[in-house]
Amino acid sequence: MSAARWNVRAPHAWRGVSCVAGLVLLAGCGWQRYAAAPPDESIVPRELAHARLDASADLAALAGLGAPHAGTQPWTPSQLGVLAAMRSRAVAAARSAVAASLARSRLARQRMNPQLQLGLERHSEREDWSDSRWSVGPGIEFTWVPPVVRRLTGERADLDVAIARLDTAERAWLARDAALDAALALLAWQEQAPHVAAAIAQREAAVAAARALVAAGIADPFEWQTMLLDRNDARLAGLSRTTAGAAARAALATALALPFEALSEVTLAAAPALPIPDLDVLRMRMLKAHPAVLRALTAHAQAERDLALAVAAQYPTVHLTPGYFFDQGDHVWSLLGGIVVPLFARHDVAITSAAATREAACAEVYAAQAAAIAELQRAHAAWRAAENVLDETRAIVVDIAAAHASLQRKRDAGIGDDLAVARAALQVEEARLQLALAQADARRSAAVLLASARVADLDPPFARLLDELTTAPADLNVAAP
Image (tube, helix red, strand yellow):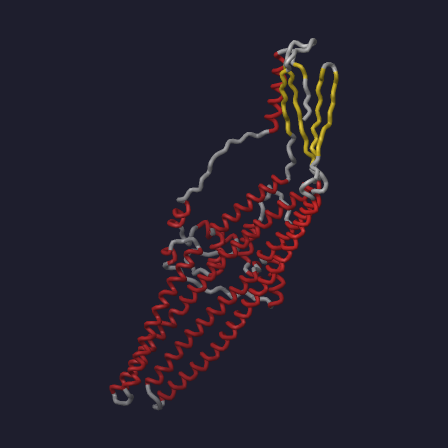
């Protein structure tokens, strides 16, 4: 590297050179002190211990998203799904990753700083015209990168931001789906409870009627004993309902980052069913919105930039080291530089590697699309089957209720007995319980279908939340891919 060099004749020259160098360094560098920031391991346990479902900040946020909730009314599963996405620590971590990628994008757009050096020499002999053996002078080095390389580097950094945003959206979907699934299970459990109680009461009534007929000598004791065994089997089977209810409540508390006790008194209500588009419409919208598909497309765009950068690397980066020095009355100017010569690592190898990576990324796009379509078709088939079962169950309930009413009329007319009517009433309650189960299954299948499509605008409050979670800060103008 060349350097401007002067023989130093007097101490004040040293001071001048030192001041100039110091001012240049201070002007070009913003000094910051390093400060360690270890994570506080007590934050999450403390928040969990004091978390509440009706926190005022959460209620205000829900109202702002268009899903208002007055603390005393029942919650809908969709409201709890939005709340879970708002409270998720995984979503918060993904948003931090977005902020970090935005900072890296700004860094990628910075130009390379010139290198300023200060040379100091001591001569073994003193020149006749000088009274000092020292020479000092500044030197500078510039690196010129082709504009296309800088542009492509910035665009690739922008794609990292896009991937971070998609990861945030996917984590929000996962948080919402976990809470929604648990809330639907708990809602089904609560809806089925009165039918279960009614079936228990009717079963007891049927056993009592059979016992009365046996005591009167009208019926065989075997029938009464058989019904008694059936009642005991039903009581044992009912124990699993207690376990299912506790499991659903625990899953919902986990999804909402709440202690189990915070949901001990929660009540749920079904929201109006969301309209479900045709399968072809869902598939088309899904391929334009699914985070996994968009992530694969973004990774392919990154591979395109990498290939373009490998091609652009054929245009050399130039290093310039201009200089000036005054040597024994002679003014010497220099403009030295250098480029990288592809002697060992050839450009065609790097280009071939980048092209192969692009082909692999393209295959990943197709794989992501195929997986999303397969999942959507499976969920759609399950939803259609659940809807058919629900329609058939409704028809069966109508028939069973009609048969029960007919037996009651016959008994009132003196034909038949109380046992037949009690057994028919028990069948009615069991059919209504099956109808509640079918309704819950259809509701959950619809939720799974809409979640597999990842079409947020079918749930407007959640769509607004996604917009808030994935929008870049206004002061960081990073272009979208």
